[in-house]
Length: 162
Image (cartoon, rainbow, N blue to C red; front, side, top):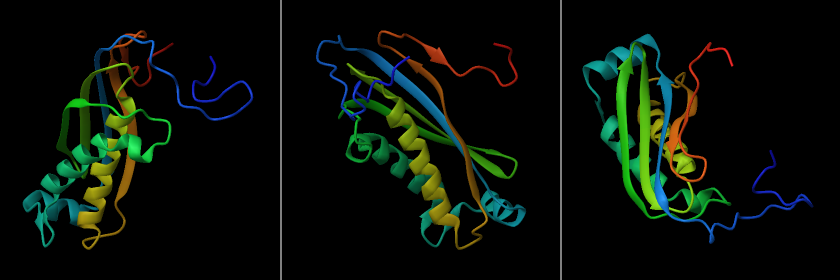
């Protein structure tokens, strides 16, 4: 399979989507930030820092990032997003962040979901670095996408045989 953003000559290009029909597009991306025992215990007890509520600030940052993806990822098309949802759940010492994006368009919203979850996690790091700089952002990945010619794609289960 050829890379769609590279010409046969090796030049970068924006994919022409003008001939595509708009369809309902969705994408879900997830990632996590791992905190030390001390930082996790403190944040689970009180998510408000001197900078404010870490989760609400990260939620807003994730939504804003999804909406601005084409401003920072060079070959992404500007899209009119109809929904962006950013959520957080504690899993032991880690916080799992998810970003679900939806639009009616000619190209997918995978990059918007990935950009949204990445920025939400970076914001959590920024909001908590005064408590400990050893936090680790990891496992940022696309979980599912729907719509378009290729239809639905779901991340295979870990350890599943192919």
